[in-house]
Length: 483
Image 1: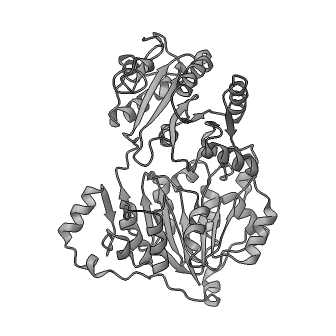
Image 2: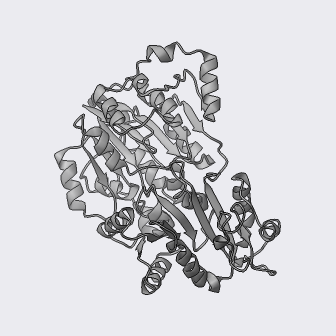
Image 3: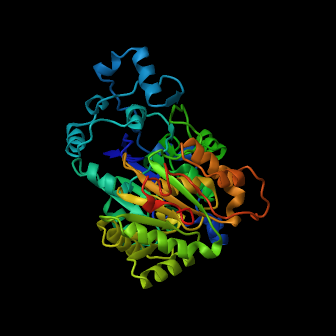
């Protein structure tokens, strides 16, 4: 039986015999380990360790390497390969690394998979696909670092698995267990799971991972940052050690590097772009220095201007807490703004309904927390508003990356209060690297050491944009107080 593993924005396929185990978190499915207290700390404590030396003898062998190099790929010179990798800011490490493919037909996919790719209108493989596919298909363990965003796995697996009759299911919190258990009992080749729900299923013996031969850890950096390392290790220890393991990570901190070192063998690695955190240059970053009490008034003014533009201008507003998201949504709806909220306290059916309304444009404003917005796949978001500045600069980059996708232009507004001044230098570096116009006042704040988030001085100022205000030359979008 053949299974596919798919990862990172239509960017990873791999063949394997047996089952697929994926740890993936989207729509708040992680379970928010760092806020889970004792419950999350003890999650997986009832899992029994497996004597793999004994267990492997009773399991069937399987094939990892399905890759056959296309003649066109084999005939490419080392110079051609080096030029291709430089053009795509690609760095590779390891021994016997396969050459990248530049056309779909070179990857060696079955005709029905090629037909699906062609029907979707893709012109050719992306950079990470070009190098990642040959790596994955050759059966090697591959840690990948890429800044690309991910699509919901289940929809993509269903899309590409339909022609080969490969079934998948999702295991995640916030949804009834009964349906998920029934789908497991009916039999699937691919499981896409969040750590908490997968461990729950393992502990209740609704499934096991002994026959899993292909493991994908997606957003590994994010899961570790949220405190899920113990749960990830418990899950991986339940999977046969001769599996193939792929890791996808937007950043490559030491914690991810150690996880890869502990669980991957015969590793080959590909990195697209720099490991330094950066924001897309398609996004105009605009910072307004205001006080905490000014936020709501400024938001009303900003949304009024956005709604005054032609067309549906989808906007995501990020808040720091679930309560703040709910309160802000209620206040905006009282003023006539068709706003909806999404966060971890919403049921899965509520989140699905909210996202359907937002994607269809029936609600043009979405208020979200960081965890809930992780993995959102909405292509036509024009504006992002950081109502509350995030706790770390990585979340800032992930937030504003909701806009400016697929080559489109986007704008990210950030309300920056004195409580956030301690993070000013990090934000300044992100804006500087992305070629943003930065106000003199914000430069001063970024160059000053703040303790406890307090600062005096003027509060007015903007950073970002090209010309005046919001990122355009029209006086309509000049900064508040600067017109």
